[in-house]
Amino acid sequence: MVANRFFLPFTIPTSERKIDFTDNLVFTGSCFSTEIAQCFANSGFHVTNNLFGTTFNPVSIANQLINSIELNKKINIFTAKDRHFDWDSANTITHSSADGLTHLIYSSRNELREKIKEASYLFITFGSAIAYKLIENELIVANCHKQPAQLFSKELLPLDEMQTLWAATITKIKALNPSIHICFTISPVRHIKDGIVENNRSKARLFELVSFLEKMENVSYFPSYEIVLDELRDYRFYKVDRIHPNQEAINYIWERFGEVYFSKSTIDMIAKIHAVRKAEQHVFIDPESQESRKHIEETNRRKSELSILAPCINW
Image 1 (cartoon, one colour):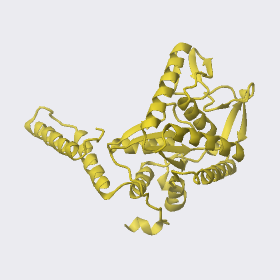
Image 2 (tube, one colour):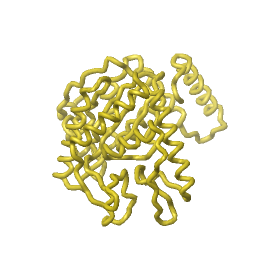
Image 3 (cartoon, rainbow, N blue to C red):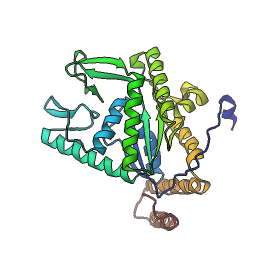
Image 4 (cartoon, rainbow, N blue to C red):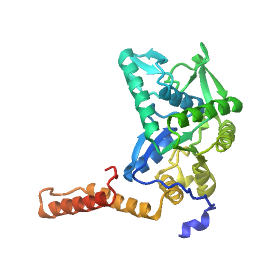
């Protein structure tokens, strides 16, 4: 492809352990995690994504996992504008009553525990090593929930503390599911609200953390950050905010991901699934016409054939 002349491609080692439609996949972490999880879901895989909402810092992500594995009953609830929130979850996790939120958090912890127990892969995306603490009790929050800035202090999380916490977290994950493979990624989303220099220092600390964790058994790293920042390396692969990778970049990362984790037969099947999904999205001028009915019948036939070939496809 001509465009590749303007790229700086690099080799990513392929994984000996491949992902197929029989695998259960769990994703947690930053908004980039959600983007990749959606690629998997659109391609027919069984996916669980961010049950506690988008979370950026490694301490909060670890706390969500540990609280779920241990089925911790403690919840850090607070109230704002007649809504109840959890300091350990994103602002999308909310309820009109404290009891309702408690039930929601307990249910999510139970679900995440069971999903990890059944999962083949756990994908964890770190977004930033910059975190915010409640001044009153020094609790590191997953989200500030648009509360007054004077309630928080801001810090670059200490590397040694993150290493200790995450080594313990991985040990707990593997005690629950000894065969699980854990793959870390670092989000290419740039947290420039913290400052360009501060964002780079934050990402550097995340790289050091992942480098330490990679030494553990069945732990790997996928270089999504490097693909965007070093291989694509162009603002045309970002949205207009110049912060988030655009759909073209996501699609390219997804293609590179497939080269690492999918067999050729799985890649071929994904292409066929995408073709069926595209056919299902076709908008008819006259849904009752013979041509429309024929299109629907043909699409359903193709879908049934693929389900026979791969019964575990999640349509």
